[in-house]
Image 1: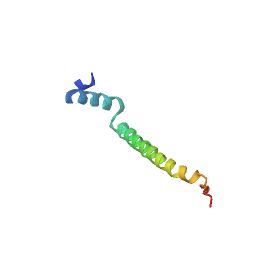
Image 2: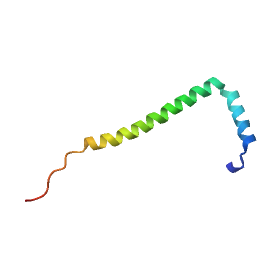
Image 3: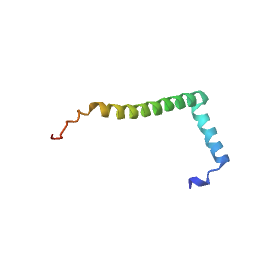
Image 4: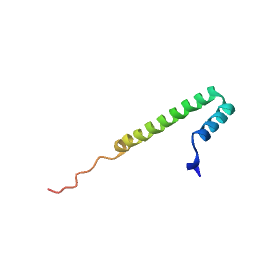
Length: 64
């Protein structure tokens, strides 16, 4: 179904979106979307860093 979209169909959809939202608002929405994705990625990488910091130190269980 979606594989039938060609360049003319995508251009028509783009024109409809620009008419509905206006070019200025589309730029703002795209910028906010980019910030959201960046914050999400930063949050994922910080979560990995904090997981290691929250672990208790490993105890030495070896017997001598």
